[in-house]
Image 1 (cartoon, helix red, strand yellow):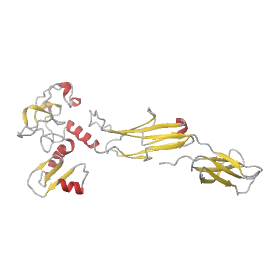
Image 2 (cartoon, rainbow, N blue to C red):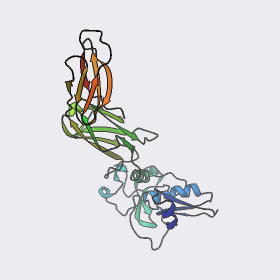
Image 3 (cartoon, rainbow, N blue to C red):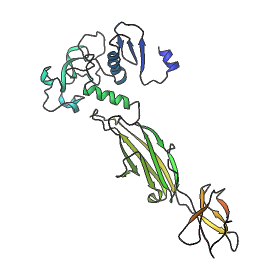
Image 4 (cartoon, rainbow, N blue to C red):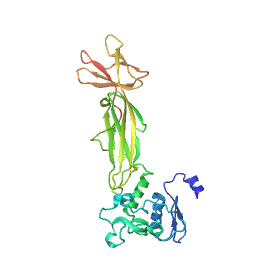
Length: 325
């Protein structure tokens, strides 16, 4: 199987092998295995807990030789401040927790787990990792969520895709995120420029006047986080991702040089191969575009062939704003 996976599915998030046999059975690990028995859907979910999130079995049946290594949902720890799922335990819940109906819905410390009747504890009275057909408990749900986010980023793509951008002082910088939105709620998005959060920018698009940054190098950073209630303890910040851009703002200067004593012929000099728009006005400030062209080696030539309806005409050259992503 390892050879087939390496050949046909070299980087799976979760590899599943379905065995064409009605006999009850399954296994979890780096490869999830299940038969086509009537219990197959529940077996796959249980074994996915092992394979995807590293969850342990919560029942007591002996498994000779299995290593006594703790999993996200099993522990030998009884000191309240050191229990790994303490964020889910209510202050009034006794520890260890009695296996009675009074605590059947509580997260606590129930004895019996990891193939041991005593000395090992589980988070809840019952859970899918203990009994097929039961839902995952809160602690197992949290582990599954974090394992998914360890593999999948909430940011599917960033625009611009390149991590560096250049702009002139007159431009408006525009950024966007392509997000993987959950079905039940929205991701939280924040934008920062040079480490300072933009308080009113909380959606997937962000615009910023380059002139507000000033000439020089700057950093724009976007942060997307999932505020799901299924996770209370995320010290590694798995439920959030950040992307950033380095922005170089340059001072843009255009210079016009007449080519004749009278008339509308002149050269435009500017930086690089930027697009330049020539605008004209017979009466100020009523500017209208008459030509859009790109500088070649920092220069372009313009001659106005349109008839004049006034005694004078004014011209200016501008670099247009950057396009929308």
